[in-house]
Amino acid sequence: MAFNPLKEKGIPVEKQLKDWSTLNVKPYDKNDVNPYTRCRIIIMNGAEVEGAFFSHQFARHCDDIELKRTLAMARRVEQQQQKRINWLIPANESPLEVTIGYEQVAVDLTAALAQNEPDPVVKAALDFALLEDFDHLYRYADLLEMTQGIKAENIVGKMTEITVGRPTVSEHRHPFDEIRPNYSAEKADILTKLHVMIIVAAEQQTMNFYMNVGNRAETDIGRGLYQEIGMVEEQHVTHYESLADPTMSWFMRDVMHQYTECYLYHSFMQQEADDRIRKIWEEHLDMEIGQLKASCEMMKKHEKRDAAEFLPAAMPKPLIMESNIDYVRKIMAEQTDFNAKGTEYVPGEQIPSDYRYFDHQKMVNGSWVPSQDIIRQYIEKNGKDYRLEIKGPHPVKRFQKRDKVVK
Ligand SMILES: [Fe+2]
Ligand SMILES: [Fe+2]
Ligand SMILES: [Fe+2]
Ligand SMILES: [Fe+2]
Image 1: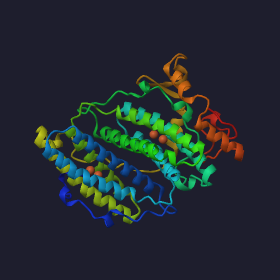
Image 2: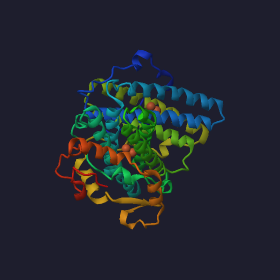
Image 3: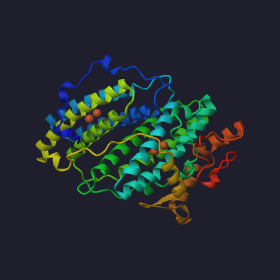
C-alpha cells in the first residue's frame, strides 16, 4: 500500500522527549552486528546531525521568537534522536574501525543512490565520487591491518570489495572544480531531492567525523591519512551540496529535511533484521511524521504554501542497503581516470597540462603523500598490499599488481 507520511497520525512533537535511560541505549556487539545495520546507524546519525545543524542555521536567520521556539522544540528532539542512534556504536569499536564503516556507507549508499537516480547530472556526480570513497576504504583498511592487526573484511562482512579506486593522491582538485550545476526544485523528481539531501548528510557526517577523530590516530602515517582523506570529504560536501537548488526557502528546506528523515526510517525499518534496532527505526518514523506535520504547519503559516503541492502522494520505493560489487566494478572500469574540469567530468588525459589541477596537486602533495605512503609501508612489511577482491582480479589492469604502489 502506498505510504504517505502526511496521511499518517505520527507523534506530536511536544510528546517526543525521552529520558536518559531510554536514550542511553545498549550498544551493538561489534562481533556480530550486520554490516548494513552498522551502515544504517551511520546514515541515520548523519541525517539527524544534519537535521540539528540545519535547524540551528534556520534559527540564526530568523527574527520571529515564536518560530525560534518551534524550531528549538523540534531541534531538541532531533538531538535526542541523534544521541540514541549514535550511542548504538560500542566503545570497543575503535575510531578506525568505525571509519571503515563510514567508508562502506560511502560506497554502498552512493552506489544505491546512483542506480536509482533519475537525473543524469546527479547520477554522474554520484558515480564520480563513488570511486573516491571506494579508494578511501582501501587506504584505511591497510592502515587498520598494519597498525591494529584487524582485517577490514570482518567489518564490511565481505559485502564490499576493498581495493584501489581512483587513487586518493589524484583526488585533490582545485576548489573551483568541485562546483556542479544544480537541479531545479520545481522540476526535479522527488527522488533527486531525497538523494541529494541524503548524500550531503552522509558526506558531511564523514567530514565532521574525520575533523574530530583524525587526530586520535596514534601513528604519524595514520594522522596524515586522516588529514588527507578529511580534505577530500570537504571536497565531497562541496560537490554534493552544489547540486541542490539554492533558491528553496528555509521553510521548504525544513519540510524536505523532515520528509527525508521519514523516507530513511521508513526504508530502514523494512530491511532491518535486528528486532531491537528495527523498533527504534519504527518509533523514529512515527516521531518524524509528527515533525514533518509541524514543519508543514509552519510553512502554511509563514508562506501560505501547502507542502502537499511538492510532496508526492506516495513515498518513492525504499532505499536498500546491500552489496553493489558488480556496479562498483563497472564504474571502476569506465571512470577510474576521470577528473573534473569546471562543472564537468572528463577523462584525465583531456585536462591540459597548464590546468589549475596540476598547481593544486603540486601545492598539497609536496614531498609526502600519506595515502601512497601507507600502501608503500604496508608492502614493505608484508610483501603485498591488503585488499579484498571477491569477484576476480582488479577491473583496471594497472591496479592488479599488489607489490608496488601504483598511481
Ligand atoms: Fe530526526
Ligand atoms: Fe571517503
Ligand atoms: Fe566522501
Ligand atoms: Fe526530524
